[in-house]
Length: 84
Image (cartoon, rainbow, N blue to C red; front, side):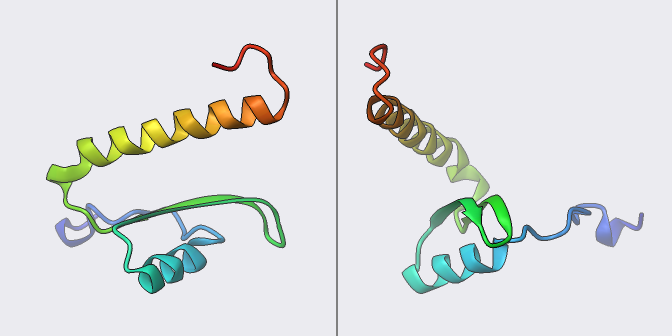
Protein backbone atom coordinates (compact mmCIF):
# COMPACT_ATOMS: atom_id res chain seq x y z
CA UNK A 1 0.00 0.00 0.00
CA UNK A 2 1.38 3.39 -0.89
CA UNK A 3 2.07 6.05 1.77
CA UNK A 4 -0.74 8.10 0.26
CA UNK A 5 -3.32 5.41 1.13
CA UNK A 6 -1.89 3.85 4.29
CA UNK A 7 -4.48 5.52 6.54
CA UNK A 8 -7.42 4.91 4.22
CA UNK A 9 -10.01 2.53 5.58
CA UNK A 10 -10.62 -0.58 3.49
CA UNK A 11 -14.06 -1.08 5.04
CA UNK A 12 -16.94 -0.19 2.75
CA UNK A 13 -19.32 2.55 3.87
CA UNK A 14 -22.07 1.35 6.19
CA UNK A 15 -25.53 0.79 4.80
CA UNK A 16 -26.91 3.76 6.77
CA UNK A 17 -23.82 5.98 6.64
CA UNK A 18 -25.37 8.32 4.06
CA UNK A 19 -28.35 8.94 6.36
CA UNK A 20 -26.15 9.50 9.41
CA UNK A 21 -24.03 11.96 7.42
CA UNK A 22 -27.11 13.80 6.19
CA UNK A 23 -28.49 13.98 9.73
CA UNK A 24 -25.21 15.38 11.08
CA UNK A 25 -25.09 17.95 8.31
CA UNK A 26 -28.71 19.07 8.70
CA UNK A 27 -28.32 19.43 12.45
CA UNK A 28 -24.84 20.97 12.22
CA UNK A 29 -23.94 18.46 14.92
CA UNK A 30 -20.46 17.68 16.15
CA UNK A 31 -21.52 14.08 16.83
CA UNK A 32 -24.35 11.84 15.67
CA UNK A 33 -25.13 8.23 16.39
CA UNK A 34 -27.66 6.44 14.24
CA UNK A 35 -28.86 3.08 15.52
CA UNK A 36 -31.29 1.20 13.29
CA UNK A 37 -33.13 -1.94 14.35
CA UNK A 38 -35.24 -3.67 11.73
CA UNK A 39 -34.68 -1.08 9.02
CA UNK A 40 -35.38 -1.73 5.35
CA UNK A 41 -31.68 -2.59 4.94
CA UNK A 42 -31.48 -4.54 8.20
CA UNK A 43 -29.88 -3.46 11.46
CA UNK A 44 -27.14 -0.87 11.47
CA UNK A 45 -25.09 1.51 13.56
CA UNK A 46 -23.23 4.57 12.30
CA UNK A 47 -21.29 7.29 14.10
CA UNK A 48 -20.37 10.61 12.49
CA UNK A 49 -18.17 13.19 14.19
CA UNK A 50 -16.39 16.43 13.43
CA UNK A 51 -14.37 16.89 16.61
CA UNK A 52 -10.58 16.78 16.76
CA UNK A 53 -8.49 13.92 18.12
CA UNK A 54 -7.60 16.03 21.15
CA UNK A 55 -11.31 16.24 22.05
CA UNK A 56 -11.87 12.50 21.60
CA UNK A 57 -11.41 11.38 25.25
CA UNK A 58 -14.00 13.89 26.50
CA UNK A 59 -16.45 13.00 23.72
CA UNK A 60 -16.07 9.26 24.32
CA UNK A 61 -16.72 9.74 28.06
CA UNK A 62 -19.90 11.66 27.23
CA UNK A 63 -20.93 8.89 24.86
CA UNK A 64 -20.28 6.22 27.50
CA UNK A 65 -22.43 8.17 29.99
CA UNK A 66 -25.23 8.35 27.43
CA UNK A 67 -24.99 4.59 26.79
CA UNK A 68 -25.16 3.93 30.54
CA UNK A 69 -28.32 6.05 30.74
CA UNK A 70 -29.90 4.31 27.73
CA UNK A 71 -29.04 0.84 29.04
CA UNK A 72 -30.57 1.63 32.42
CA UNK A 73 -33.69 3.09 30.78
CA UNK A 74 -34.09 0.02 28.53
CA UNK A 75 -33.77 -2.33 31.51
CA UNK A 76 -36.45 -0.39 33.42
CA UNK A 77 -38.72 -0.41 30.35
CA UNK A 78 -38.25 -4.19 30.16
CA UNK A 79 -39.24 -4.53 33.81
CA UNK A 80 -35.80 -5.62 34.95
CA UNK A 81 -35.90 -5.30 38.72
CA UNK A 82 -32.10 -5.15 38.90
CA UNK A 83 -31.99 -1.80 37.09
CA UNK A 84 -30.56 1.02 39.17
